[in-house]
Image 1: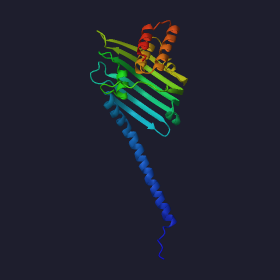
Image 2 (image 1 turned 60 degrees about the vertical axis):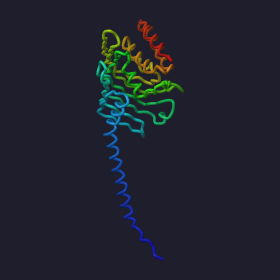
Image 3 (image 1 turned 180 degrees about the vertical axis):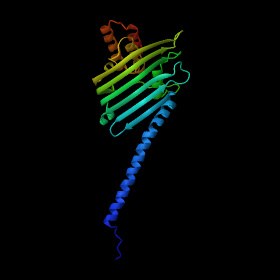
Length: 258
């Protein structure tokens, strides 16, 4: 009976090495393409969905370790808004627990947020740019249909170590007869531990800046009664500590409850 020729062991080892080398090269090329193309893909997607222009120096996402790194992100308002700037983010990093992304409780070992400037703008129609951006990402409801309401279980989270740096906050209101622009030089640099609520995240803010941030968050989470209740309680507590009533802001948040 004729037998098929066998491949020498040394040759089989050489073929396996070449195959592994080729696969390694493909993996490296894929990783490079991921790093190079991801920022432009993200920017293009955000602009097409929201109209906000995005520029980012570096964006990397590792799906295997649930880590994110962003640096040099600039987000500008769409054309026609009375102010151009929206977000100037120097750095954002997050190291999360991978399995927590599949659960109802997000857990991160460390999150770093370094903001150079946040400009909240209310246009002539009374729409806040932060709300317009969020609604654009979420998608608009079809004509005759109601926008989806926030429901289900409350999304819980735990950030074991949060580094918050925030230089400047600007609030520009063009909804009245005359524009009102207020600047807050915050110069915040705080290390927070075991952060598990929205009020803990905004706890470094004080006075009028706290009111601006809280009211903006109230608009973003207007379909989440649990978050609104938490924000209202936080404002009331801040008012007691600082001697400010913050009554109008509390009433504004109460009206946003669904």
